[in-house]
Image 1 (cartoon, helix red, strand yellow):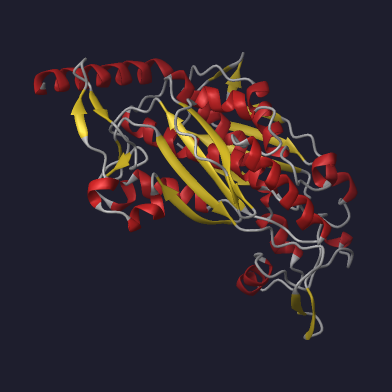
Image 2: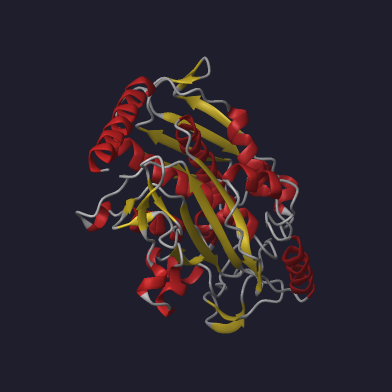
Length: 391
């Protein structure tokens, strides 16, 4: 299974195409739209979110509410296109100096992209490098999440740190409970006291014309053991998940389970002892590995966190250079957010779901949902027989 996206931040639409989705999956636009709405939420967002109301439209691949096995084409309209038709026109006769950008923003793709593609107007870079593209990736990830949910695999993302404020770690909640608890939270955070401090930090940063980053955690429960593999570097699932999260604009670090904390502890503390429970099933008293050992799922919950840097568009811009004049200047100022960590968490959940769904389909391959169900149930049966013979 693979996907492609197309579209610019202020172009007419975002387009996504998924190939390899099995037939027979019940799929509705409303299911995807709920996740798109969550991406647009979160305290600290900018004026763009008051314009857009992201809704997906199926262009192909679905008939009478079910996937048919052909490529699934998705579209999300950019309502702000009406204000940018002249600036973003594909017509050569419409070329304009309006909104031309020649002062790159430190921390953004502006300068690196301009040098790579020899663009004089850096808008040709920022329009595609913009996090606006992640709206389509949330839609695509929602399709993957729905397929996983059919097999009892559920995921959730929540904020664990923002602007230097850390939330208390909660390890006893299921994905369903976490979703219920953060549903009314302005920052998708489980710790109300920490969230209050985070909100204050966002307000302070906004008044100073500054921005804030943070850390979100994605938890996935219900996964079988055996997804991914230790036999080749590119089959290791922890590598693939880390790469998926690092592909989100602004993400600068990823950790699984204990992550960086494990480096400062002894092995007797870090590693999760293995035992049989009373029912003869493998059990662990801890989950420091975050559900992955040797690049493979071990049957425990996936716990993975990603660190997002502060957004590089500042209302009080940093020093830069004007590529048109060759003189020192200040970086361009575009409409932006003070903090988008809650939105990034929704994107993070989506890309994790996509990568896990890919791995699921690699192991339990089939062109239809019925084939997948047969293969999956047969595997679970074999696992039970293996454990029974061992115990």
